[in-house]
Amino acid sequence: MVPKLADSVEGLRAAGNQSFRNGQFAEAAGLYSRALRALQAQGCSNPEEESILFSNRAACHLKDGNCRDCIKDCTSALALIPFSMKPLLRRASAYEALEKYPLAYVDYKTVLQIDDKVASALEGINRMTRALVDSLGPQWRLKLPSIPLVPVSAQKRWDFSPPEYQKEVAKSKFKETTTAKTTVPSAGDVERARALKEEGNELVKKGNHKKAIEKYSESLSFSDMESATYSNRALCHLVLKQYKEAVKDCTEALRLDGKNVKAFYRRAQAYKALKDYKSSFEDISSLLQLEPRNVPAQRLRQEVNQSLN
Image 1 (tube, rainbow, N blue to C red):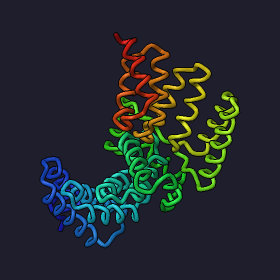
Image 2: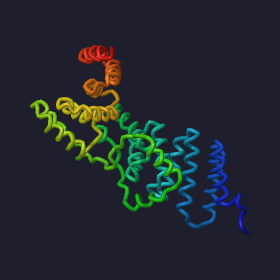
Image 3: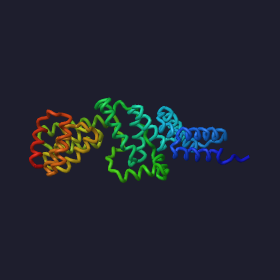
Image 4: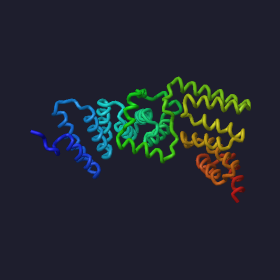
């Protein structure tokens, strides 16, 4: 006897989808569970369908704040179909909610290996980077779990991707988000980047700012997650009167570390040179909130105030 549509895997999944859209997440999770049992009762292997059901149920758990069960279901989905976009993003969100920032970082970074334009993953990487720097310090990259390398075949599989993923990509086209490099720096890359930054610092001390810019740029080619490297390169641009480049580097430095006082100060200097006094004043104000007794910033504020008046 052919099962009724409502009791079939397809029917139960469709009903679960409708309940989810209606905001009835517990009901939707129950329907996806029934669909999973129905699929398993059929006795035939359908890993793609099973992975979707686990991922959908994980979305319900996430909406209800049940992060641990969300992680379990996403892990089950990924065991069936590795490098699936939705369960990776959902598991990353659950890890983040549980403050398991290294694991969230790994999942967001894995998504960006598949496609570097997924807005939620880009935003997640930025949040996790700040959280990891705050919690683990400048050596945080060395304390991360290993990040899986996504094979080209998995990347190609997502060339023709589901509507939710297409929406993520479309959203990123309308939102300016500075992207992290999709290549994950190894520990060796991080050390090489640090050594090149130090070479740049020595060149600055000798007054060779052009050569220092080259060293900082080379450092960033190995690892682009060091805020100080950007703010140091910005200093060189300032000395060479390359003010727009200085603004860009300071902005990137502040994206990585919102408390980078030197980046605020140097961007304020660059804005002042570009006669954008309002932006300069805003940066000085932000800096003085962090360091109220910063004398150079106080002096710069007086100069910018005179220009504004």
